[in-house]
Amino acid sequence: MQINGSEIAEIAAKSAYDRKALDIVVLDLKGLSSLTDYFVICSGNSDTHVQGIAEIIEESLDEKTVKIWHREGEKRSTWILLDYIDVIVHIFTKEAREFYSLERLWGDAPKTEYGSEDSVET
View (cartoon, rainbow, N blue to C red):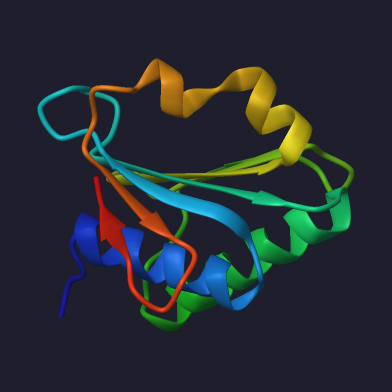
């Protein structure tokens, strides 16, 4: 059974939530970008927290036999990128997220916010 991009994004967002990531959003880029179908964006409180969020997302998707295509960012990084081709996960410290402001750059993309038990699409 193959998992589609929407399901990968959902698993990544829920895994980030389970690791206490902050301000989790999924941007639906279908029709807006040839790069990928979804961005999952979230924040951690520190470099260590960012690393922990990345690890749980990778573990959760690996359990579903979804293999990562590319990873960028080191243990002491303020931004880790996990590329699953149809889904790219961006995990930032708060400061780096404000600086790069991906949500503003992709402001016309439909956005689903996570951070409570229910997700809210805007």
